[in-house]
Amino acid sequence: MNSTSGKKAIRGFTLIEVLVAVLILATGATGVAAMQLHALRAARESGLQSDALQLAADLSELVRIYGDAELFDYDAAGDTAPSALSACTGRACEFAAWKQRMRNVLPRPRAVLCRDSAPASGDALRWTCDGATPAPLVIKIGWSSADTAPGQGIASPSLVLAAEH
Image (cartoon, rainbow, N blue to C red):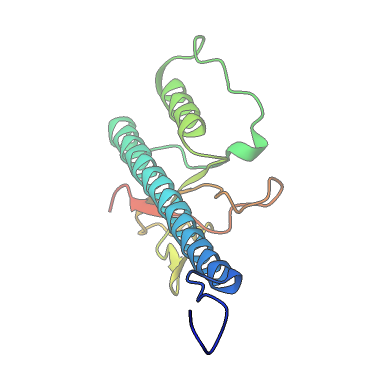
């Protein structure tokens, strides 16, 4: 027996040490979950960018095929019902089919086909077009992100592509 104390030495962890360890693990797990969520959002945005680029290339091809393209500013948020494509033919049908594909692929999309000599103002892309005669024909496409409220418009285009120069 120990002459200094009649008690045995107890080995193990105290409750405080266990709580601190659990807190550190929980903080780490929360960080991992946040990084995973950010990666998923980035992957979704990348997929939308790819889809928008393909739509812009398709519209550019329509402009090339039909020559003098009809200029438009199309916002799917104001378009409640898709038009019937079975009854249409030719150029109007092709553009209507393109708009329907855009509605199916992008969340609340907007597209502008116009002549614009300066599609960007500083570092930001803009929806407005100057309509200048020597300006290139440009395709501007944007969509609502997950952060955008349903009634809120799309702040700026996400993609601008020159259809001709």
